[in-house]
Length: 155
Image 1 (cartoon, one colour):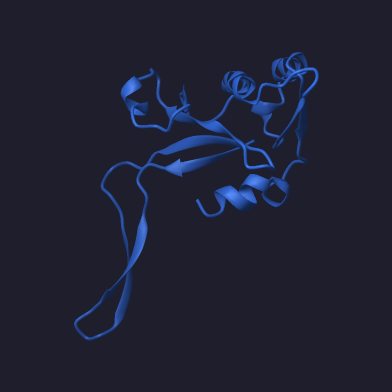
Image 2: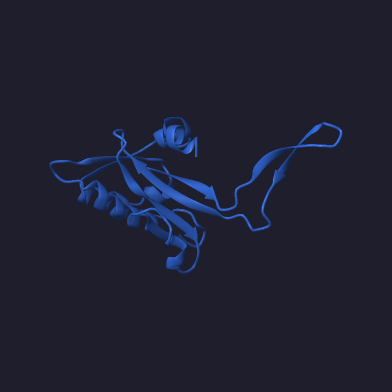
């Protein structure tokens, strides 16, 4: 399980050729204010994935914002647009709904060591729902986190 920020106004670089035949690189960007939406993804080694959660920086939920989101997307909002311990519990409920852990078939959940993931309520929730929760050492998730390497890198 990991999160990444996705810009709502992407910037791209283009090459222009001037009248004298010289190449000039310039950035094209929109006049809109750039905002970041947090996407929470979870995937197993067998390529089974839990539908993504999107965290928008808003005070109130507007269902129109998620109208064209992929099926199963969990819509979340926060003041900052980033994960917090309350949203993590909501995401864990979403995870349990799709992963279906049980006593006979427990689940291992690997996440980074962010403070929102390491709350007492999250640990107790995982324990009650047959989830073994493993956090990666601080400042190593860019090397050890499989989603950073294979999923978010091309994104």
